[in-house]
Length: 342
Image (cartoon, rainbow, N blue to C red; front, side, top):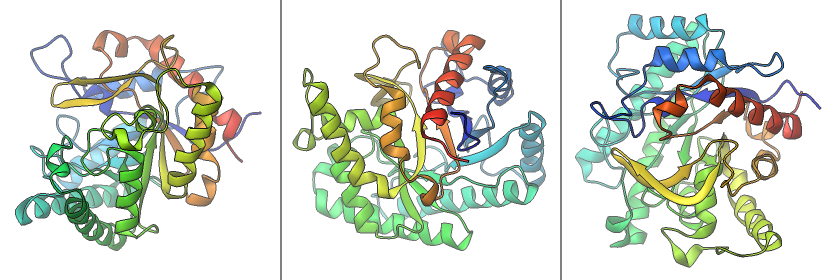
């Protein structure tokens, strides 16, 4: 049956992540990403909003209040709400590694502060009424973390605790993005350990992405935490999927619909992460609708009001086709029809 909630959002960062000027896949402007999102329609249903990447060239984290209000006006002109925001915590932007030295950690916290400021302006404007601020450890790769896993997890957790205090002071919640390329967050067990080490579930939770968490099951960067292997039966797969989601679902406050073909992919500065696939990719490993249900059980009680599509590092030739977005929207509607609420 049809449901009014959760709201259906499209992400703006597929126009930026893994894109490089001077290649056949340069960054796609915010205007164009909004246009493509607004153009999607399936049986009269359209996207309700967007999730927003606080990185150049879409957004200058140092933008003035007036510049940010102009962006909010632009988004609202398409009939969209803003949901979750991605804080510019990565090295080379405003932020730096959460497990680095004191100066790196300070930069990380500054990035969270800037994201909270932008959230406040969007909230006051009226274009944003729900969603979280997403963070990660901002430590690409796991080799340095593996030198001392216990202490490095404690360092990340200490930084996250300070970030959560900043968010709480601004009336925001943080969601830590589970993805195999982020140190200390690269397996389902390590992610759970980190969340428990922070121990602030009212302010800092988990952001689950179907594509990335599929790689959690396979233990790509943490073989000791693998729950399934290639060729296992469907019965074993879903028993493992239930084990993982039962552990992480209580922490899940932000959710991405996505597809994965079981491989690892990278482009530009964003390397060796779970490969996102088109919603209808014949090589996709996931029953998107069924797997979404494991994460969305009890979602309303955890404050989730929207879900977002994530499909990073698709070639621009695919992103520029309107039918790509219609296919994505159709799958999002299926997820809401199966697991939504009113």
